[in-house]
Length: 282
Image (tube, rainbow, N blue to C red):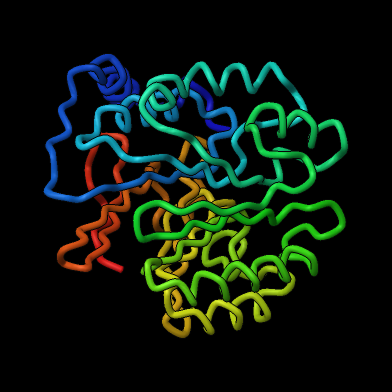
């Protein structure tokens, strides 16, 4: 871990100026119909996360909701760390709902499951669920079920299959997004450890062309990987120590914007300086 004494003074000064001036940052409106934001892997990186929560709260027009891709806190069974998370989240949660996928740091023992349910409002019998907004459908999976870690187990896979079959038959649903913590095909630090049933899950996704993106965390970086026309996006830059050596190693959150008249979906990454590092359409 880098010691404070080894960090150049100009770097420290720069970060202090960013956070001190956060209330003065203006986010200019875009001519979008609506948007949502996503980020992953906060853990105990509260200074960075608090900055992003404040920035997100200033976006105009206000995003409809936010999704955290797991590793929300350092120890999921510790209620005190959740209090820290919610305190930093207040600018965001005052403006929009916040949805969660479970990560490995939320843990999966019985006590931690109860805390996760109490803190997120997700019913304790299962931590995977779905919801719709406008003409889009959102599926949030749980890749850390006890005994089925780093996979989508049999019961959940059947549920996922049913969900995808159902929305594929609905003419009013144009877009499907899937969220989970563990990458199906990691491209960074965990490149050699695909999800345990990666091919089975990927082959299911291939059957459903309405899927616009599969968005994950776990790797502390940004990455876009396309396999068989399925776009996999990793967004693990929410505050945890970055993973270096594979590119995309910068703190960020995703903003996904919908331009419905143009049938266009745009993805941007916002960094610590509110710079846009990635800007592409799905």
